[in-house]
Image (cartoon, rainbow, N blue to C red; front, top):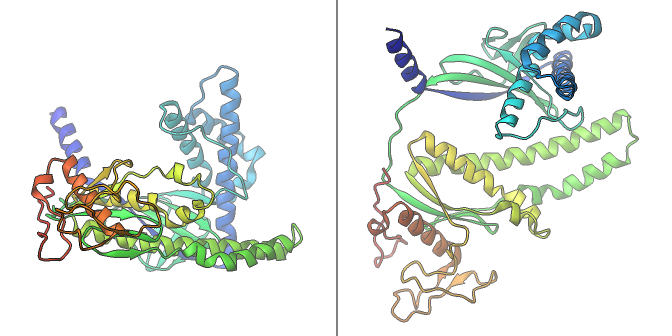
Length: 403
């Protein structure tokens, strides 16, 4: 009987998924100060626990999160009475998070935990599901009260917890909800994507997504804001105002970039069941000092990561093509390779007299997208069922069952 109950519980767990909804908060000045103090307590407890962990580990002991938590609660009222001014989760959860971080470190899944800086680390603290209450456009936080939210929670399910974070001058709450995992619908379409700097993405269907280059556009304002910041006296209120202005500009750039990447990735995984992309070596590309800023601004790695995560949730599949595959130098129709092709050549001209495209120059990125699609289909054994379509009468439309 117990074995059957365990199996049923495991099946129920497999059918559930955890989603998070990030909502902007509108606290008053007093509430924002209280949120900042709670985040400061969480940072202090993390640093204290990490220091105590290192001290005990150096003397030969085997510290655990439970022993550190008991020790902190024993000395908390005498040595750290100011930690009682905020919710208890701000002092309890960092120790548990540190234990998980060391577990991941010892198993080789993450780096060794580091101390958190007041200036460089993002202020945040955790709230368990029994420590907050949701109302109509508001959130109740212990020892703080009701805080206005920009919108209500979108998901209907079991609330697991929440984390409040601060970015620039804004505060956000990310609420985790357990939802039943829906069976995704498989889509019978495939597409190849060629990513780059001139265009963010060029699809094998011929669609082009321009690279907005938000950071490059905002460099003028950022340069003026940074000059204003470094001219202010250290420790003054005007310097703090200038620092917040720089932080707001950076956050605006991040929001604009994320908006484009999120909408593009969602549209692609909703339309196509199989997506072929290039497996770029981004760390190597960022070593180029002339293009490092442009590659960082384009966030090509973030785009691929979003495609992988969303495709797995919607029943799709992302196939990575080898980075050394000559997608730009190869004709997608006959396979002829242009060995002398350079970055300045934006038009692909096939020199094979037997190729139907010998008199029809093609866009370089469009040709690369079609080659990426064909290679992705070859990797999964469906290459014989696909012909890259360009919209002309000479090509056949793509009809691949990605499932």
